Length: 250
Image 1 (cartoon, rainbow, N blue to C red):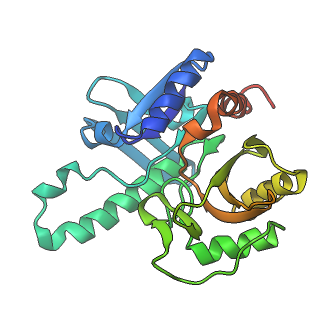
Image 2: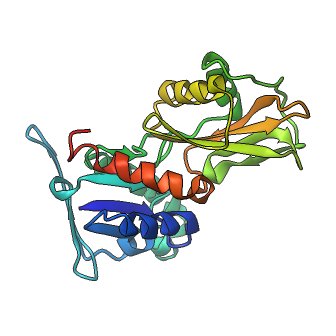
């Protein structure tokens, strides 16, 4: 089976799920954080023989890592529905434990996985804007001068940061396992995006650019959790190809 993991209000992930089903990716299961909050059975083992996960959901579906062939992972956090039942003084501890547990069982799922969990994010590593700028520069992308200011847009919950003034036109490029989808750009921009994905060790990465009056492109930000709809049908084609790659031997 293949999995799409997301929150129930992740509209672009639901869009991708429908698009992948239409492209024949079957069996494809949609599993939300809210669904996992009410799973009736969890079994997670770690030992010398490897790691194992076996989840039985409330609707009877069963997820075992050995049955999974590919994953589109959009989880930003562990389920929080039951936290209101926890004493306020214990909630921070419980949140940390849930995050650690999710990090562990998600890591049992096999490749291809877009994106793998890290200690800095369940669906790819969250980075501060200064880190993205440093990596973008190393990747050969044109970068602006950076300063910390309230004039810049930030959205820490999604791991997205734009280092351009509000109102600036932004073009988007999405890299999926080396494939590039999105706005038409000069080859050196596309190659830089591929290098940025490699440097950041991110299988699915959205890179944004501010476009100047002379069609000059400047790095404007990056996120591991983009609006997938920006990639359109071309992105769905690439996602299907990548998610099928292991079983078909690329």
